[in-house]
Length: 174
Picture 1 (cartoon, one colour):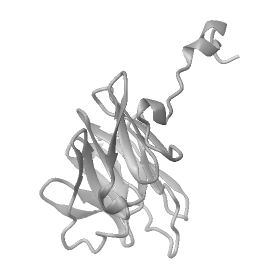
Picture 2: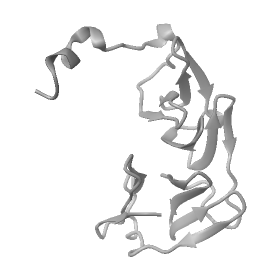
Picture 3: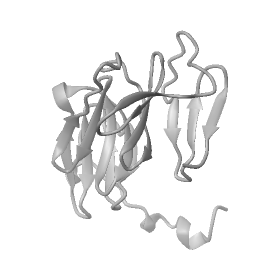
Picture 4: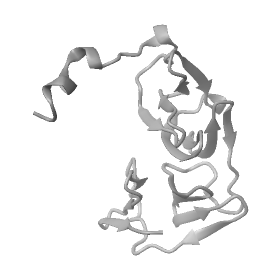
């Protein structure tokens, strides 16, 4: 068993459906913001839970949501329609990546800190801050044609995993 029997009792589970405001469609992603707010994403909407109801937030241009990742406070970042977006209870906002050549082809994001994101692009990983977009040094470039669904991911323990097609790498520490 995976814990005391009392933790496995059916009444401890809550089910959420569209009746509670959950957006229609299959839940594709789950994330918990740093402030404890739970979020879900179906393929075209995100929603946050206030403890009673889910509140839906439509993705811009009905873009497919590919990933959600908590950043700080109640804010998350998302990849939707190949674009990097910031997300909070008020909705989505596009994060511009000037001169990166990766504005519409992104597939993942990993927060490195409250104001720093790592974003894999065709030419390698980009380090994105509120004022800069710079290449981020990695042990191996992505393999040509390698498009893993989650090539870059930050874990709850703070490590960042990078799948290049040439192997899996982990970045530990700050």
